[in-house]
Image (tube, rainbow, N blue to C red; front, side, top):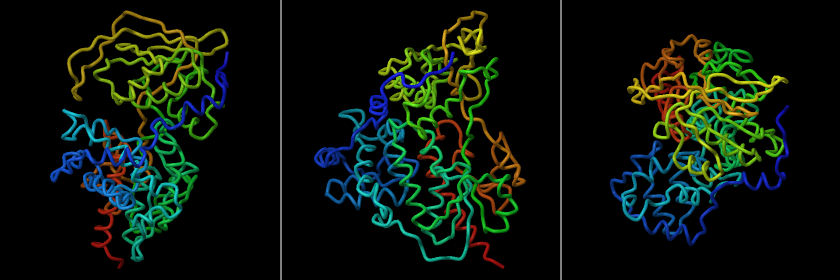
Length: 455
């Protein structure tokens, strides 16, 4: 037995994986912007991790200044085009909207996309929006990681006039926005354009380069005045001790999603009966892809309940619309295989929830009751595995697989800074939080460079 490609016609698959939300028309954007109360002390701004002037950019749409609106967004969030598509606005700015309890919140995410689409795709899009490199300072910074935090930091540093080189082990910049988000939420072209715009500011990219293998920490310390570690939360999923997880047909959900981004989707093999382990956003994305590639059944198994899942509620609803099933209070124990060694099922235990643990969520208690779920494809979406080796390579102190922080973005080495998913956890593991971290870390690095002139 093996996984199959081409379960559905290629054109149909690609159509079903196209961006879910269409852009607003000019008339619809004007009408929506006109609903805004333009609050002076806007709670939507407080809820936005990047503190975009939301009433300000919406007012500019209402006055038909779409370019000015894009500028207002990008001056605080250079990945505003991505965030307009992938932010959990239902839990952030839109949830905080004063109109939410009554007539419904302003569609802030859709309006942000309308504004940033004014410059999206233009080779000089950032320049048109007033995002340009500053006067050269003669100082240089190495940014390790070309994802949202790294790109935001690189852009901010270039605006300040510092030289920037981005090191990334992937062949293309973008990180999560390029490799970890399904096309339904954001086409790869958006991530590629944003990365190109950062390079147009004068940042230099060295892709396919891994620190510790191709370049050493000593090299970076010698060649740069400061280093920003924005290496993310890990490329692979965490192990849950699932017996037999090396059997053919068991796959890392992150790798599955990455293949959708870098290959033609219809060429990505999928099983007939797919089980996803987990109920976070990666699990939701993997489930959606499996369903739209043509799997007969797609089931998410999770050891807690819907109340404790970390996936966004709207993504959960989309999964239900795609026919995805959910089995709550179910703990996978062992992968079952057929005579050919391929996955044939997943043995699980029924779970009961106990008292709340340190994170406030009830602790799962595994019972003796077993259930078997027949399947031929298992996707593991059990959280990302931290990679502290990079921090250890720099000789930094670590805590819980993260660099020990001595201040905002400061590690135990004064010239080495860290931010983004490398230091965040929980619901802060998002594109918009990473962008805010990168931008603010760049400002901290700028202050450090001012305080430490070259001798």
